[in-house]
Image (cartoon, rainbow, N blue to C red; front, side, top):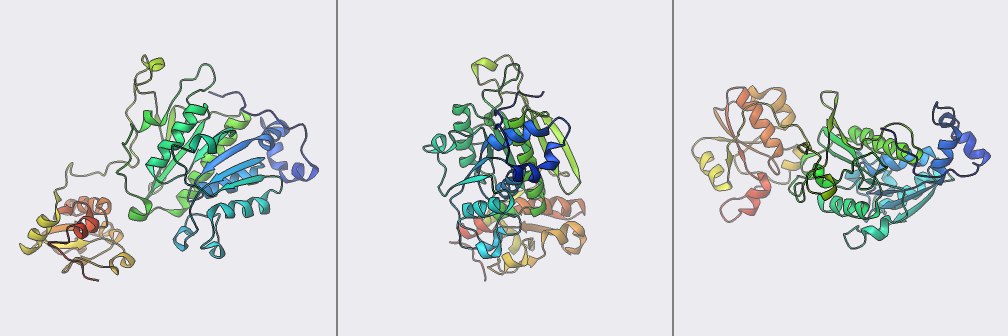
Length: 382
C-alpha cells in the first residue's frame, strides 16, 4: 500500500536545482512537488560503507536536502572494491568526509552533516533525532539493534538492508506507520541476538556490485517514503540471489510479542542466505578431531584464497580455493577430506559439493580461527 508523504514540500527550488533534477520532475506521479519534498527532507544514513556509500550517492544525486551520515571508521584500501563513495586518495581519512565531498560534487544544494562517532544504544536516539527516514547500512548486529531500537522509540521508518557473499535482503521497519498499516520491527525478522554469530564480510566476502544494487534499492525506498509514491517494503522482505539472478519476496508479519499485535499470525524469519542444497548434515570436527582425522589419512583441504593462506596454513594441507572446488569437486583426489576455511562457512559449501561428487567430507568447525585458538595442540605454518 502507498503511504502519505512524510515531508511537506519546499515552496520553490532554485533555477539550478530545477535544471539538475529535470528528469525527476517529468516522472509521471512524481513531478515538481515530490522533488520539492526531497529538497525538504532529512535522511540519516548509518554506515558509510558498502551499502551506505551507494545510498549517499543516490540520495545526494536525487536532491535530498539534508543527509546525516554516521560512521566512525577510516577508509581502508580493502574498502574500495565495494564502497564506491571513497577513492584511493581517501585511504586513511574519515569515511564521513567522503560523503561531504561527493555530495558537493553531485548536488550543491544538499547539506551533509558528517558524524564521526560510534552509534551505541546510549547515543542512537540523539544522533537520529530529526530525521524523516533512517537507512541502516551497518555491518554488526549490535549496531543494527541499536539503530532499530532508536527508530522504534522515535517512530521513524527504518530502511534496512544486509549483504553477504552473493546474497542480500532489504525491507522497511516502522513501529508507527500510518493508519491501516501493521507495525513491523527488526525483532519480527531477527529475534534479539539471533544475528550475533553471523560471520562478517571480512570473513566470507561480498560481491561489490551487489552492494551497489542494494544501496540504490535502500535509497529508492527512502525516496518513496519521503514523497509518498509507490509501495514501500513494509511487511515484505526482498531477497536477492546475485549468483542465480533471482529476486524473491517473502512476507513479513509481526511476531506475537507486541500487545497490539497478538492477533497477527507470525511469519518465520527469512534467512540471510538460502540454506545449501545437498546432504542435511555435514560432520563438524573440533581441531583435535580434525588433527586425528589427518593422522588417520584424511586430507585437510584449505579452501581459502591465496592471500589468506599466505598468512599461514595447517601443516600438510592441500590448498584449493573454494571457487575451484565448486567448479570441479573431483579435482580433489582423496576419499576422505576435512575442509578448512577461516570460520567454517565456505568449508560447509565445499563439503556439500565434495559429498555430491562421492567424497566423504567433513568440516573443521570454526575454521582456522578455531584451530589457532586451540594452539596448545596444533600449529599454523606461515
